[in-house]
Image 1 (cartoon, rainbow, N blue to C red):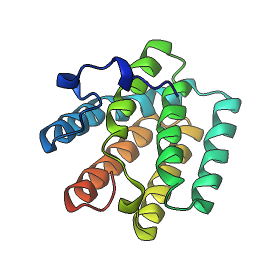
Image 2: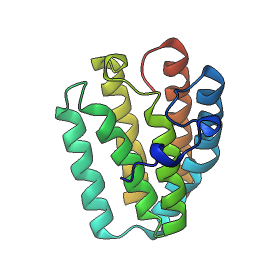
Image 3: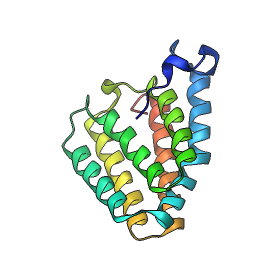
Image 4: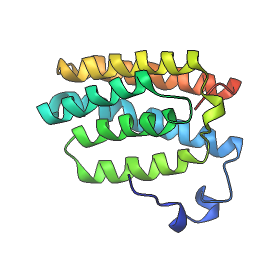
Length: 156
């Protein structure tokens, strides 16, 4: 995944760090963008996309807390890639780069990791079944849980 922090101005959430307001704005954007990405991925995914998504889930199940944030980001980026839309992937990459400043390994408790893997599995199952509406709803539900957990300080 590209790292864009070096080129993102501070007022857009660059290297200076993320305020609570910035985190809220990023979550708003994720809730607009990512459910639609998942729906589009369900309609356009290839067998290779599915293989990558399932492999990523297997790695998430075995991940240590310090490994999980990167695998989580990769899962969301794989969904974006499965849309077949390079511009959408570019926007998702920038979004997740902004989000990366909010994520830290200590926030990922084993329980939060298990919940996230289960939610990711529901998204991937819907994509595999080519069920756009189910993929959209699964991603939306996952992101609402992420938002709630982040507000409590239990992972982003």
